[in-house]
Image (cartoon, rainbow, N blue to C red; front, side):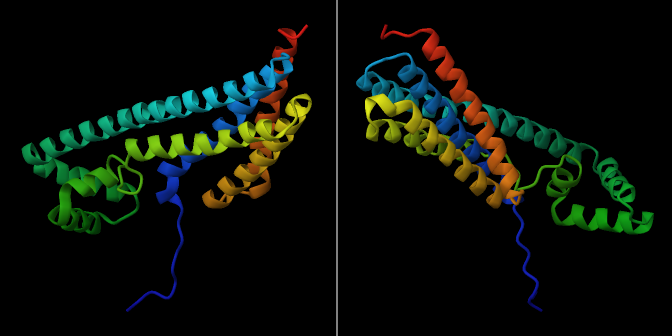
Length: 231
């Protein structure tokens, strides 16, 4: 019988969503901070633009490398744990079966039922059962280094494009204000999108992202004015 109650869960999005949200917000905030800071220091308009583009390229590569190394470490740990579990299943199958049954007893199943469930799952796919119920490793939440790397890098470039194009299209005298407004709008939009995709409260998600972006731009502007190169 086909289910008439389709369920829409979001946990399968965690891997790429976390990397994409982090990359987009970092691209907007870090590159806008660089652009605003350089503009506040009195640098020529061309220097502001070149600095923004350079920050975009360097930031995207850095984000991709950082995400890949971080998530690959998680993947290595998962692989090592699975190797240990596989060896134990071959060397001590009885003890592993009892361990699985004990897990189900702690979750509320009656002893006889817990034993039956453990036996049937072991017969079906012992390693998958232990990975899921003992180690907490599921296919939906497995570490995917390449996915995290490209999601983060592409999202960073997309986010960084906003302050760069804002600076490109604005007059030299109004770079700071135009970039600041564009950045604030972009952060509110990205926070809203991320909240909707992740199922979180939209207003809260948008405001918390915007707050940190404004803080970064204020700090960058103050530093730029401190090291004014135009005077």
